[in-house]
Amino acid sequence: PIVLGIETSCDETGVGIVRGHTLLANTIASSMDEHARFGGVVPEVASRAHLEAMTPTVESALAGAGLRFSDIDAVAVTAGPGLAGALLVGVAAAKAYALGLGVPLYGVNHLAAHVAVDQLEHGPLPKPAIALLVSGGHSSLLLVPDVAQDVISLGSTVDDAAGEAFDKVARVLGLPFPGGPHIDRAAREGSGSAVAFPRGKYDDGTLDFSFSGLKTAVARWVEAREASGEPVPVADVAASFQEAVVDVLTRKALQACARYDVKDLLIGGGVAANSRLRALAQERCDAAGVRLRVPRPGLCTDNGAMVAALGADLVAAGATPSTLRIPADSSLPITVVHV
Ligand code: ATP
Ligand code: MG
Ligand code: FE
Image (cartoon, rainbow, N blue to C red; front, side, top):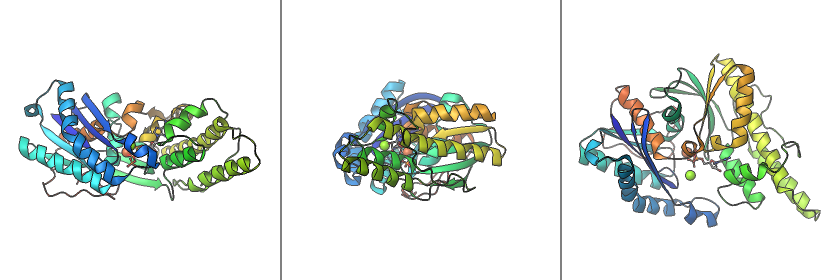
């Protein structure tokens, strides 16, 4: 079946089209340029941008795939979590397309979609897999017996998400928003062992994370440096901060694999685009005999293909379609794969 996926949980209007696990189109319009000067996504601005971008983005995805509306067999949409007003635009559009085309609608979980997307690149997910989900709003370790049916949370951040920490530290270093890619780039010129930043919850025996102490430690270190009149070594601070984050993420991910005796680790979400996270995860997985799957960077950050991919899994699993009454749920829990 050919599934159209719509994603509007944050600033990206994403429309993807898949046939099973084959990617046919993935079109993204972002309103990030309108938010960057505010140092964060402005919800009202994002909602309006989704409204304006929706129809052209759907049309461009169809054209890119060489398809017509009549070729679409099902519509999937992010029902949550995310910005309420932004989600609402996507959910309303998806209902209209599903009703107009006479095809089933699937409201899906954005976080499960960050996990499901890897199948477009690497084929069906091993069952079970451990997933490290690291994004702008979430950082969790998940046991995934079947991404279309059952996602179990093993641990999550007790304060900031990993992506949030990247964005806040970037601001402290005077780098543009969103900061993750800028820290990644700056860190390539620096040393990850230049400054010994704290690693929260390193040895606490849980599968939880904490990044707010690290973020504060970086801010204090930079302030002290500025007060002393010396220049801030941006590349070294970026690399040392990044090393602290990815050290904890990969350590706990492999602890989860060992604890649940699972030999397949998947990393998803925007922070999975990070080059050092990908490299260290590969190194540690090789040492532990764990197979690693990480989608290419363009599929890690928000997009419509990830929603279509999870929709295709739901169709294949014979899941019950959503009704036209489903709400947008800004705090949809990770354990609810579809609504
Ligand atoms: P959520 O998925 O939790 O709802 P979101 O959808 O806003 O949040 P994503 O698009 O999945 O988040 O990821 C965006 C985050 O990823 C931002 O915090 C951004 O800085 C971070 N990010 C993107 N690329 C990189 C990178 N190369 N290194 C580190 N972080 C990155
Ligand atoms: Mg985004
Ligand atoms: Fe996301």
